Length: 218
Image (cartoon, rainbow, N blue to C red; front, side, top):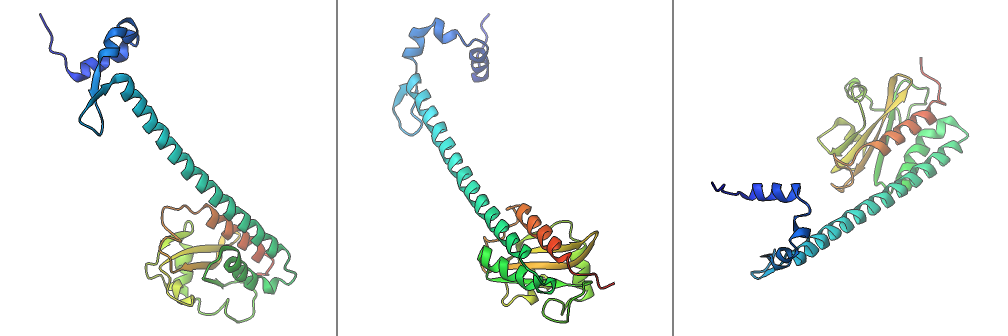
């Protein structure tokens, strides 16, 4: 009896018998397969070489992307470190909010940054005004920083112009939310939802640690 061989059966046989072509070298050299982008046939060896070249090219492209991302992350990390050094050099705690905003704008080339605080001892001014209960509740319910498009959030009214993308970073005092940082940009790709929030979380922790020098309003 003869059994009809399917492509899957042949593939499984070759996988289970890796010495087949070694034992039948004349068959290996005589086999031809279709060219992937041409009408002519090529040898199996040529086809393997083309496959390896394609894999090599794909790996090179992936490596280039990883290197680019690593360079970008290193630059951001250096900017965060520089910004942190500036905050540590501030003598008067009352001046910290201004240095936090100014440092972020300068270090990260941001067009617009807003900081609002509540529950801390600060004189009335741009960092304490216009913080209604609705926004405080919204920020308090954030499990992590927001990063993505502007979905008509109330906090954007603090920015000089309406952003296309933005990041919203809560400011903590122990287990309470006492403020929020808003970073805005007219570039829709500056803050995207799939970029991750690791550095934004670092900025939030560092800003919160710096503002811990301000006494609580309670």
